[in-house]
Length: 215
Image (tube, rainbow, N blue to C red; front, side, top):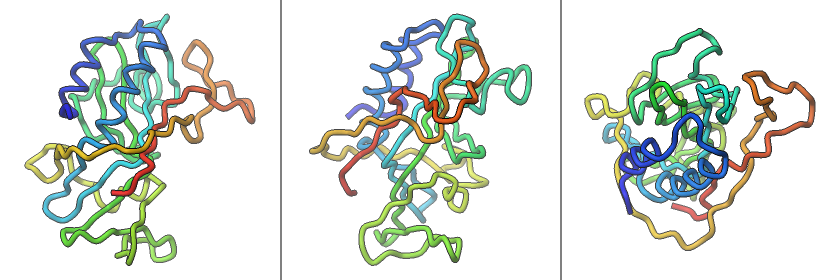
């Protein structure tokens, strides 16, 4: 299986700020298996984080491009001009953690870790205890479905910095179909940078992908 960074570079080579929706959708469908089956996030020698659900976000900086106003790291949201992240930066925000693949002057693109499995250095699954507010050992397979819990494991680190957090390639066999779904809590957007704040008008882009198999 191709390495994640190579596939993200390929995305950057083929997509620009004026790319059409169908082209972006096709590329996200190609990226999803790499995130879900092509490796894991290694946190020192302590934890392995496997992405189970990935949600893609794409916001063009061009007037006639595809706009995704919910994207946190973009021009015109909190600041007029926001610097671009290097490829595969780990971006912490109010909804959790993104792995970014932006293109300077063209667009912001990222993959939100929506659900995931955690294994400790002994191969045991860790799940979040909502009452105690920490990860604890599970006696059976378990995954976590809220990305903000990752702050407990990833906060303060940078992807690829001093090998504290790295993406480790690991090809795993896919035997079941990857589920395509709309992203959680995302509203439909206008053609400009403004939300349609209408209750019940959910974004219809199927940019959420889930691996149905256990690790």
